[in-house]
Image (tube, rainbow, N blue to C red; front, top):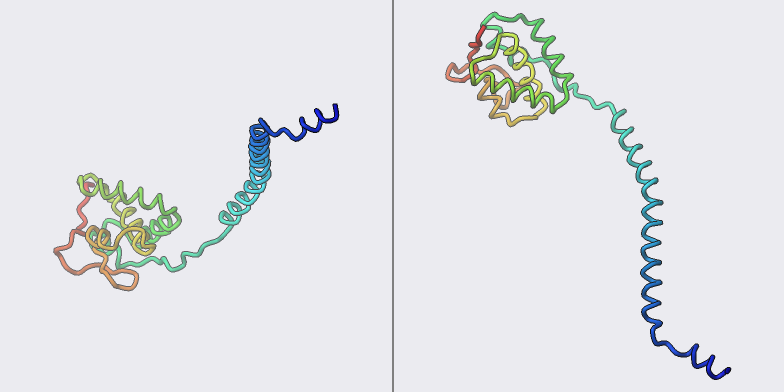
Length: 170
C-alpha cells in the first residue's frame, strides 16, 4: 500500500492542467484586487486634482481694454466708450469656449448682414478679448476687425480697404 501511495504522489500526469488553472485564477484574483485598491485611490487623486484646478486663480491681467480695437464703432457713433468698456469687461469674464462660440455666431451674422448695432459692439468686445488671449489666429481677427498685427494690444487699422467697416442692420 505504501508503494502504491508513493507511486500516486510521484505521478505527475494531469497535474500541469491543474497548475495552470490555479495560476490563472491567482493572476485574475490579484488583478481584481489591485484594480479595486487602485480605483479608490485614483478617485481620491482625481478629486484632489480637480479641486486644485477649480480653486486655482489664473490671472489674465494682460488682457486690457484697448480703445483702438473699437475705432470703427466709435467713428460710427453708435456706441459710447463706457458701454464698450462694460462690454469688454463682460467678454473678458467669459470662458474661452464661450468666446469662440460667440465669435462664430457673430461672424456668421456679420457675413449674412443681419447683425444689430448692439450685437456688433458685443462682437468687437469678444474679438478684442480673443485677440489678446490668442484664441484665434490673428489673421482672422485682423481681416474681420482690422486689428493691426504686431501692435501692442492691437490697434485699429487705418487702411480703408480692410473689411472692418461698421454697417450693421439697425
